[in-house]
Amino acid sequence: MRPAKAILTLALCSVGLAALAAPAATQGTEPLYVRHEMQAEINPAVVAIWDVGNTATDDYGMLDASKMTQAQWNTLADAAAALVASSERMARAGDIRAAAPGNMATEEYEVTMAQVQDYIDADPATFRVRAAEFALVARNLETAARARDAAVAGEIVANLDAECAVCHAQFWYPEAP
Image (cartoon, rainbow, N blue to C red):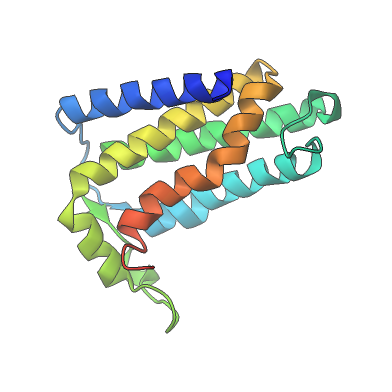
């Protein structure tokens, strides 16, 4: 295991254990709409991160500091900060709703928002833990980007899709093969 990945794995385990040991820290009575967070906050930030990763990588798909501009480092850090903020909102949410009443429509081939709500309602504590774990990943990316640490940032960017999939597999597509 590469050193950056070992550090990331250790940090994730520590946060996961702390989140499981602490009571759910929820805030406010306003519902948090997961679909809105995904559409308005998470997706744009992840796309910005991927855009940097797709243009400044080496032959092995890792970030290459020599190909990174100041603007790209800033984009990476700012997008990671947006992921932190959104993920932390989800981790602290009291009332977690799959989607707002006006944002429930799905295509025939998509998972319905009612199904997603059922998945969340079945285990909201784990939803919050997953959100807290993702916030830590994003915070580590932000820190690495601000430090111009291409090795650590590259490792996180390369694994970002897998980090998203952890939550999606349980709360969006649990019945997928």
